[in-house]
Length: 498
Ligand code: GLN
Image (cartoon, rainbow, N blue to C red; front, side, top):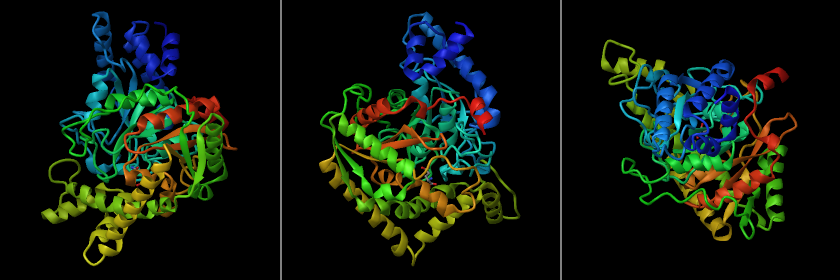
């Protein structure tokens, strides 16, 4: 296979790459080499990756080619180059959460999703940058420095899975994994012009995902198209006995029916978000609703005021859970240790030097909200608000098959523009948080370009385990959106426009 052919295949997407490798039209080695070359050429400017695993990627690719030659099944994602968010444990490969506190740590095991991708034939080329412990919306809270948006290098890629989103948007890999606790897959997907799926809580194993807020965290996928993101999700979905919150039934079939259209589908456009977001973001959601209606869906605007309780409730519940989950980083058994005269001083010094400012802020807020005397006023109230959000979704899904909303309040903002104001940064998650609180699936699909030429996504939300219907609506929205609104984009070309 010539260089030229391999380039073409990497851009063709997950399903086309796997098809070509499985049929012997392309070798996994040539596709993976192409991905590694692109990373080498672009990542100096983008900083999508914390760590590359080129050698093991090429070895894995060779094994896939060998199985093709021997007539064995190399898996549904054979030879597909992927990237993994650096909060997913990878055996023997540094896993940092973009935090100093995990300095030098190499996990002794792989996350279930990592094993499943490998078994499906996908080849990981490295670990991607994130906001420290997935706390943030811009990938600027990273101990390794920010990731840049491939559409405009002076803008953020969103976060916290910014490295994974930008790597797909720049065409460095065909798909990637992220995690979404309050929007960390969908928000960067929207800002980078790619598809990002947050599945139903419990559909994908959290075993080996380093915990931020355990009742909200889910692993999901990024790819340039709905079909490709769904194919990657299919490979990682399904019951895992190692995760006690994993749903104990087989994963739904995600791929068939994507092209079945939206005739008769009952769609509710959540009106409450429209007044809260920028004009291009509101217009994208309204235009997608209009297109669905013209195609025969029964579209209605619906007011669900409880949606706006999501953000304040989340910023109590998520820090509360984080304050407990992050108590384990004490310098004793792994990661950073800053010595002191006694154990307590060692613990305190380690945590003070190991955690960045946003992580420390969350631990303090969470500890405060859980402390006696304040628990009822904060944590218990937030849980009540969470219950109201869940009940409101339940009522809405009696009337609608899917809901539609903007993904984000704005397109990609300038690097540095929100770093001094944490509350402003928190608002980025306004439209994504409610489905984390309810555990329902949601997907962001690229839909439009704003006046600055930056991508804007639209969000489709669905009831638990209704990923198939959600993805069908998403595939329709993708089909009517202009191709110019989605990645991959070449970071070099975009940089010249800056
Ligand atoms: N941006 C949100 C936060 O900072 C969501 C993060 C996430 O989904 N991991 O908490």
